[in-house]
Length: 135
Image (cartoon, rainbow, N blue to C red; front, side, top):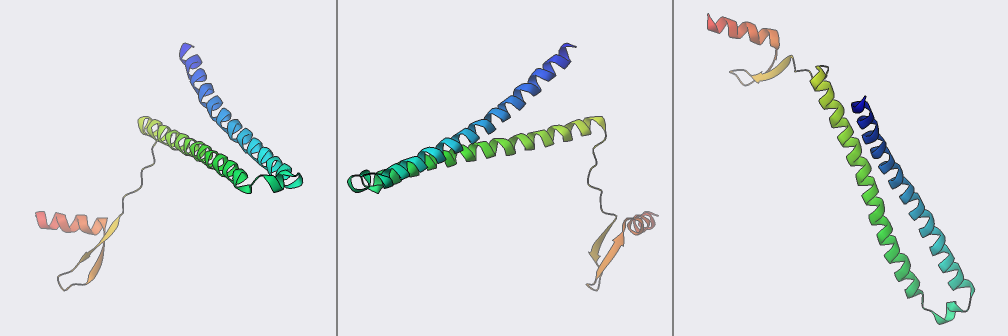
């Protein structure tokens, strides 16, 4: 029972961490959009339009936008990393259980003959040829 409880806690921590990362991105997106739209609307609709240069708003939006993009990239990389780790864990579990479906080996390949032509050889033909050479 303690192992099941520890597994549950570990899985719960991982799921909560990913959920919180998604929640943070959603909140960051909403706040970024709302605040920047409000800043630009207030600037455009009041007398600030004539007294404050748009350069300040561009700097605010651009700087915050760069931070938002960095946050988004970090989130996407965490998601991709988590998926890759999960795939490898499942692959390792399958390997340990003996149920890993490895890529099948080819049963045929090609080789050049003495006169330079390409010849397709199946695994059975090659085995018979090697067996004849050994005799």
